[in-house]
Image (tube, rainbow, N blue to C red; front, side, top):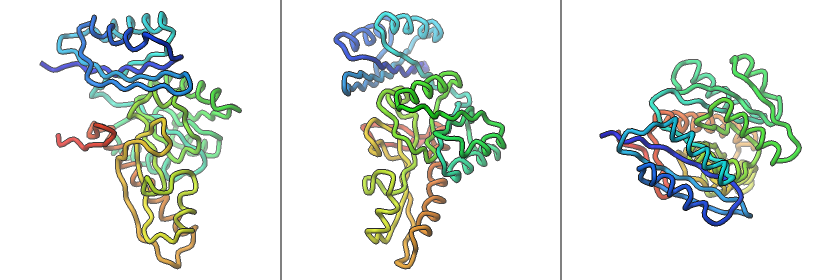
Amino acid sequence: MRKTVIGITVVGKDREGIVAAFTNFVFEKGGNIEKVNQNVIKGLFGMYLEVSFTKQVDVKKFDSEIQALAKKEKMDVSTHHETTSEKNIALFVTKEPLCLETILNAAKNKSLKGNISVIVGTEKTLEVIAKKAKIPFIAVEEKTQEQSEEKIIEICKKYDVDLIVLARYMRILTPNFVWRYPNRIINIHPSLLPAFPGALAYAQAYERGTKIVGVTSHYVTENLDQGPIIFQDSFKVDPNDTLEEIKTKGQQLEAQTLLKAVKMHLENKLEVRWRKVHIKSK
């Protein structure tokens, strides 16, 4: 019999009894816990449960009842159901257009198995591209990270976002946001991680005179640039290449590698086990 799988994220102020409250709820409903991951950072609690049901389950009733429990426990809870229907994608951007344009072109050409429902920017530089593609663009320019993430969380809920793609999004996301989308935020980094983390990867590679420069697509975790690696690719560097020439080559490869990772995720071909990404054989 085909089983129903539900992902549950729980985020809120840490205190005793939270894990038991939600695991007991699952057991009472006849569910089995297949994955559990929890963490606490500076008093903030985050937990991801992946649960399965071999018997038929009323998903709407389950969602309603777990929200009642969330209210009682004063936690922010969301559920995610894997379906064969088209997933909603949010693209997060800043200034660099190439990754955004590459993904939009793939969607336009019907080679992307998903619906780009919203584009979120840290500023309005790329709004014109979104307008041309007839996709809602929302600039989140709040002064503090906490205010920004509150707004982004509401945007993602409004557009029922399944996958978040960081298309050269130049802002660090905190655990309060990342924990809500486990293995559903994909980033592109301009180096072969774990080497050269941070924003100035090309400059570091140029200064060190590296012979190969690469890019890494990875899932985002609370640890900067340390999430499970999806794909990596590289290109050779000539000693006479300027920093700008390296950046140009790198940005083109970033777009291609990010698109490849996004496509594979949307086609349900990626699975994370023990912090490693495995490509499903079927």
